[in-house]
Length: 205
Image (cartoon, rainbow, N blue to C red; front, side):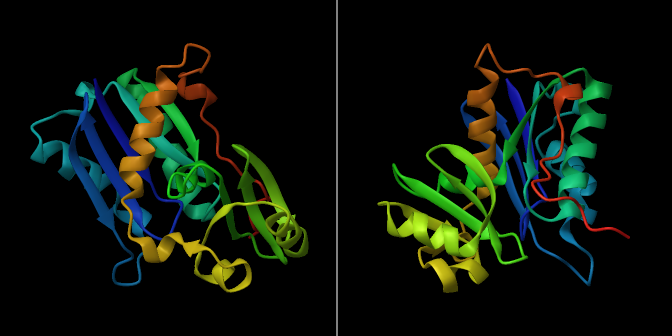
């Protein structure tokens, strides 16, 4: 099975390609020349496929980060995944960035990302809790034994480790989660079910 996964929701863009148990590519792209990294998504996908002598129609599964994160990035991810899956008649899996980042911790992760408005996008006990007030997050952390994963801004408040300084290839993590979810017979792999995860509404204008 050939799986293509991509993520433009976080601070870098990740594009990964896996055939059965072997990774063929795991590209990382940063913002360039004032352009947000998602502007390079299509060209990076084409390049990855070309380098591995594959065509889009060879793809069996598309895994994508659906958010939370950059609203521009969320839209780019889900739109490209839906269009490709519709044209190629392949399966899709959406994965939350919070679940992806939880894999950077051990058995009891807590992920808290900046959600602005004095709140954090919160994930623990294998569940997305939404955008939670910072004081409430502090209380939850103080009452539990969690391994905390944050971003650079929230690390100053909650401690733990910032994913931005760990340099993990999140594309590989996303790919592995997508493959596992695709093997769950209860999971709907229809591209029509792939929706952005907007925990808070996108900004107006």
